Each structure stands twice: as structure tokens, then as C-alpha cells.
Image (cartoon, rainbow, N blue to C red; front, top):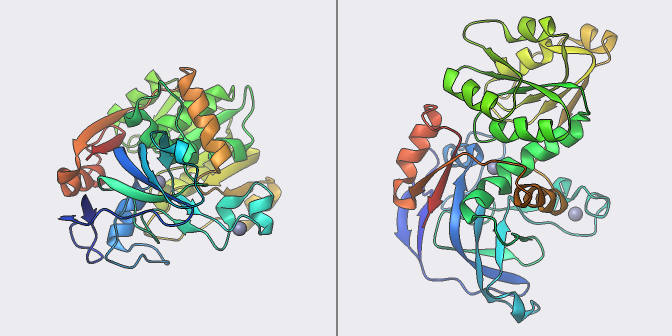
Length: 336
Ligand SMILES: [Zn+2]
Ligand SMILES: [Zn+2]
């Protein structure tokens, strides 16, 4: 099978041939139909974060494909089913986080495309218990971005507590942001979208954002305060300044959700205003299998639109360069 491999952190990926792996106990082998490119894959390949992956490894955690083989302990009738292979490759299943619906916080988790080989290839090994069924009728190329960008923003809107008539500010309209706008609308909120590119703001308006702010033309915090302030702000842009602006746009009692993980890991938040204004700051990391099922249900019901651009896996390095330069409308999806 062909896979795209990070051999050295900070170096371009190399497409190479590997022997087809055999699923061991509890595993499935998935023949990939589509695989999304997430910012996390780029950070992984660069080794940007405090916890670094160990090369050589295959990135990719938005994989969708058909099960072609199962290991022992996995029902043979799962062969032929379409599944999503998400970031949460596996978790322990019995710690306090796992049993309370927070498996994404499990300390024993493994992560697809980071601690174990991921979906930038023709096949991937996955844990039979942690893949999520993709309902019939969903295009695999739509299902791929939903597997991380979708579930991550869906969960972020959930933890923001956004409700009908709330104003939700979405900072960064890309692969994640274009979906965050839609989930905020589904929650009944009004949306203000913030970005530095006019075409992204146009996309946000098409997807239901009532207000838009171009952060190169005006101060986002002031612009959002002029609308009455945001009840919730979702920080999806990989720049600490966007987090600070998102904080500044909150109304009293508002909630700021940290989602993006900039390589520059620091932001300054004032203590006094946070206390007096009763601000909540919460981190949100991907979503559970249940969240992903709900994301697929909404998409199957026609409630969401996935903006994507299809590329062959052989163009992986060009695609990464284009995402970094902001030349991609929303999500790149590789087809092997
Ligand atoms: Zn991701
Ligand atoms: Zn656990």
C-alpha cells in the first residue's frame, strides 16, 4: 500500500510503499476512500507542539473507508461497512473519563496519525471499538472533514452552551470555522464570523453568519462589542491574537472556547476583567464517538454543508503549503 510518511519533523512528507498490515485482536483494516487534511497534521509534521510525535509516522485522522479485514474478536459481518477513523484511535474504556462520557480526556488514549499511523494512505489499521459508522448516503469525501473538523466544532458549540438568540463569534473561517458557523446556527444562535480574508467571510455569510468582521480592517473586539458582545466565542484561528480578540469581544457572563492550537502556545488574559465580568474560558478537544454519530446524523439530514477540495495523496506537500498560505477554501480531502 502507498502511504505518505513523515520521516523527519519539519521535512516534506515522502510517499512510499509499505506491506499491507494485518489487523490484530480487536482491530479492523480500512481501505480508505477519503482522508482530510487537518491543521493538526501540519503541526504534527513540523513537530510544533510540546508533545511531539515520533517519526517515521503516517499523519491523518479524518479517514473514511470500507472495512476489508478484521482481527480476532471482531465480528466478520463488519467487513464491507463504511467507517470513520477519528483522532481518538483508542482509549482505556474504564477510567473515570471514559465511563463519564469524556473518553477524549483518557490519559491512556492513542491518537490516529500522531501516536499511531494514520490515514494518509490507501489503508489504515483502526480499533474496531473506536471507529464510527458512516450512515448510507453520506459522501465519504464529506464524511472525512466531519470526522475531525466537524466533530471538533460541534463539540465546541456544545461546551460553549450557545442557545437560541445568543450571539456566537466564530474566529477563523476555514476547515473548522465553516462548520462551526453551521452548528451555531443549528443551536439557534446568531453568528458573527471573524477572519482576515474576504472570501472566507463571504463563505461564512453563505453558510448563515449574520455579521462578519474582517480583522485586517477593524478591531474585532470593538466590532463585536458594538453588536452587544458575544455570549460565546470559538477560537479556531491558529494565532494567539485571535484568542485575545475573541476574549475582548465577549459580553459579561460570556464563554470563550479554546480550540485551535497555535505553535505559539501563549496568550495573555487579564485576571481583573475575567473575574468582574464572570468570564468562562474552556478548552475543547475533538469530540466523542457519540458526538461524531450526531454530526453524521445532522449531515445525513441535510443540515450541514461541507466545503472541500479534492486532491490526490501524491500532492500532500503542495496541499500543506496551500493550507498554510490560506489558499484553500476550507478543507483539503485526499483520495488515495
Ligand atoms: Zn483534526
Ligand atoms: Zn480511559
